[in-house]
Length: 335
Image (cartoon, rainbow, N blue to C red; front, side, top):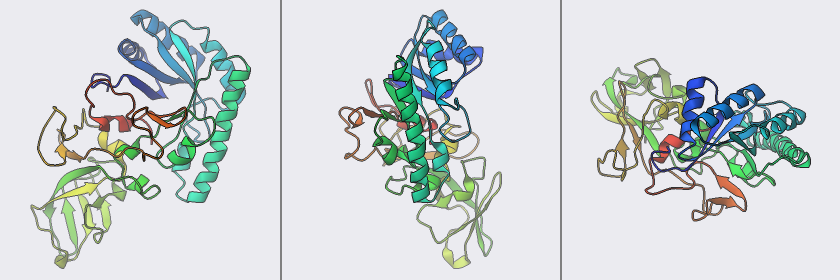
């Protein structure tokens, strides 16, 4: 991403291990790099790696807002960790992050919103506790694609770290249908029994294949995915023959893109194929086709400034240096 021209990168995860920390520190010499932390000892190792590389790494205390994953559990723990971070040479405490991913696992809209509001209240209250303790907290980062609108407008949130909206998938599309699907997996019909269409893209080729669908063929329900086979229910009169090429909307975009080194846009110099879509190199499976991805609605995101509203940034595709790169790699951030 940095080599492609993105000069501000937030690694929305905790990072550990000497090799990974060394790479992070070197990267911070060429861009503004931030990383989540929830452990004081590991934060000290991050700081040491930065000093060795002659760089400064921005750190955000990660708060578990309800997902039961990484992050400190309480406001008191967050304040205590932040107090230790400001004493470390090589890192710069920039605030808090608290991804409400558990809300994205809640398909019911009202319940999802209720859980999101509770999570953001906890995050913003913790940010205020840091400031009351005299600790810097200019950034409060959260949001996933399924909660982006609520979280972006929540008072006190300064950054949205939603990612999957850039290309979308069927998992997120069921909850937030306003974003266009901008990525498909290209596959070929390899068998055509009387009641099934079988393609050669299986569960090795995409994330959440049980949610995958054939573009333009909502009449063909997803029956099953095996390692090398995707199976859709289809009567003989439904058409499609052996050798036909079809495109699948993946069930989950991050797990589909992660195997790719890069997925270029149509006008990106990596590979030009004409038309409105391009294919990436994919070994040994199937090419991904990608259209220019959807941005946040103009009513929320000011493209010129990168502001979603006063003080709230969209961290997936914000601040470009030089030519706009292949945005799709940014989807591997958060939901």
